[in-house]
Image (cartoon, rainbow over all chains, first blue to last red; front, side, top):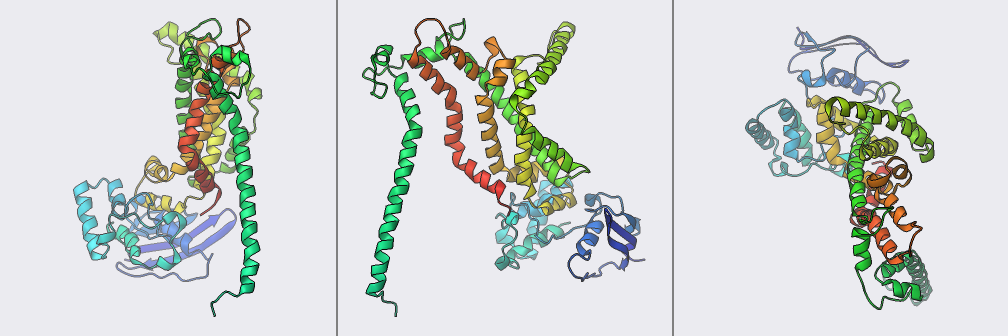
Length: 158
Length: 314
């Protein structure tokens, strides 16, 4: 039994059908790479899996459980956005811990998890600093600088 | 070769001189207009610090010979507004009591509206925003009668409440009425400001917060509000100035002891009995204008910065 199963997934925006019946399976621990020209629906597919877009028909299940109508926060998923989407008003550490805070994880536990992941990803010195100005989008020159660690850290404390 | 040739110097020289000339013209014009615009304020301040004998004597541009603060004290504490002679201080507080909640409520609602209209789009959001924009173009005068009818209804609810429970709960209170009027009238503007600002706010941040499990108000409070300082300053200054300076709604819906500062100032200046005390009038007018002036002086540069932030997309 595959871990992620998508059956006959369709997504329409008004009259325009973007996803025209996607069937897809993925085993636990597997990698899935989506390749295609822009506008072909890669992001839309990711958004539907994350629950950020409602689907028009079909099913998405994770570990045998259908998650079609679950809220994004209830799907136990993590996502790195194209623009990193780091909250500009919080420090890197606060960014990493925000999801745990929203799920009601106690402060001590959050701090421990942040310290651990910051060490693993070698971003300890950045933890107390604000992320790069996400509002203006990442500066191209710094795109793959050390701060890429922050969004990665955020998804890995999930 | 990096040496500058004599010909280049010759050519550079006249341009440097013309740069000086245009600078002198620019500064000259700026100083001229600054003086022109400051003139009334200077005359007001000087007149308010003179005794009456000096004012009736003639030259209004002359500095005061006998500096006196009596007109200020009289304007604040003892001058006659209509029939009561207790100064304008009560009306000043009337205005504060009306402006602070009206600005706060209309700004908060505007930012919530902007948040919903950009980040939680619903079917028909364009129509709703269009209608709210429409509210910006409604002239004050045309809402007077419908507003009076509604306030009349609220007043009768207040009277019934008073009879039943002993408390009117603010229904029919003139200050509460004015707050309501200004909130309703200002909502179109505050919504417009915040919608345009939040339009440029990255939606991916909202999506990330949703995945993190933050709810509607948590996202608003933790992600949107901390990033909204520039537009808050713009909106607060705009609303504060408009509501503080409003005369029409104040004179229509809050007469007598409940009148705001602007209405009281009119009643001080437009008295038809006795000598017109120009120095007291000037002092009262400066007091009436002071809060908006202070707001501009304190937050003025953020105002320009905030307007720019709202106008230019990242």
